[in-house]
Length: 564
Image 1 (tube, rainbow, N blue to C red):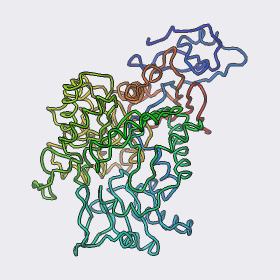
Image 2 (cartoon, rainbow, N blue to C red):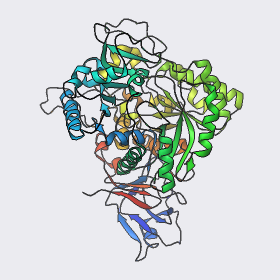
Image 3 (cartoon, rainbow, N blue to C red):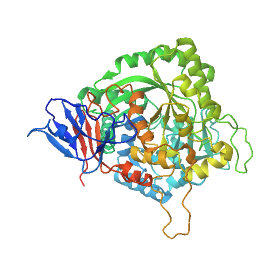
Image 4 (tube, rainbow, N blue to C red):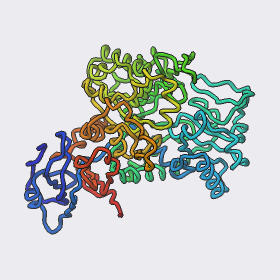
């Protein structure tokens, strides 16, 4: 029965009745009501007991058969970046070449004052080979430079004028941490991968402080509408095409407009070395204000599988299924990584890793093992994000090292980017190692969850849907009956609804060092709560993604209410 029976004699400001509660202290919802006063939960008990705490001034929220859950917490997200994109040339709502070009043309026409057309949100699977061309953009914006990052942030689409202004031509070498996609004569084709983006990005005017501030607040409102009350921003710092969002967060936190609880992961500059650690320590010291705390460090160890920069133990395959000479990138030399991790761990930082390929995962786990041997166990709560490919030999090491698996569950499904740009170049055996959520959990690993928005949707319920079903949320049987639906993506790695929901609440609260005050519905914790329009435990798992957020509360204050 979870925490039912806990109650207070204090008068309630708000009571939630008429539904069930997923407290997070058990594996199923309980029949209970909840009372809130002064921003804290004061009772989780039967409806009669909770109603006895109400008076004429108490707000009574009728759940109407819905479910009350802890506020969702996104353990890997980029709201400051996503918000700026929302307010610029945002391609994320389209999924065709014509749709993208229509948006670009319209934005350029509506903003004749813009010296550059900047934005992003395109998806690799829309384009042949995953690489859009400069000629496509030239056709709609020939007279101003254009730079549009893709949805995963690991590539950019540029037009001819942008390349010309940046001095990028057939003689420009690929940077060590990136690649210029090229035409037959060696000239730049219009797609820049990883570190090659900076060749153009350094010439692009970044968002002004006011634009970045407006973007963060727009992103916060969007996250509230999805029930997200806390998050960890996985990239606090300056990076190509974007302003340093450190000051953006501090401004919002100090003025009180940042209402969510946010942990900032300070960006490890891979062009620098160990000499940057004192700078990070100083940023941590000054990076605490209001509900923002810059107490983590983000280290990106590799790239992504779709552009062959994820670090693999064995080489990628070519289009014919033969091994290539490319095993991806390690952005940080493993020897430097080991020393950096030990020193940052000793300094008390939490470490937040981007580790997508199996070699990168192993390099990070090896570094964490060295840090533990040198420093001993602690409560820094390190976590590895993405984990697309994990070698079976490394599954058990997460629990042994006390490292959490930070999952982006929405990616664990058959869709064009997976089936056309990834699996053929991994091969069937290695493809089976992708997103092993079930194996990690069974091995005792703590699961935390995030979206990586703007890379993919920040809707936690969509992520939970895929974690449980291993199918994308909008997938439905073909109405003509002529096509079979896509199979589940290695369903042996599926989670239960309770496990997935816990990862997005109590799990991420643990990663954010907020588990003592949030993440579950218990007496004494902050009233960070979400009202769902239904109880997904009472419906088929295939309908999880249909669940909608009706209300979101932080400290018992309503920050979002659905209008219809």
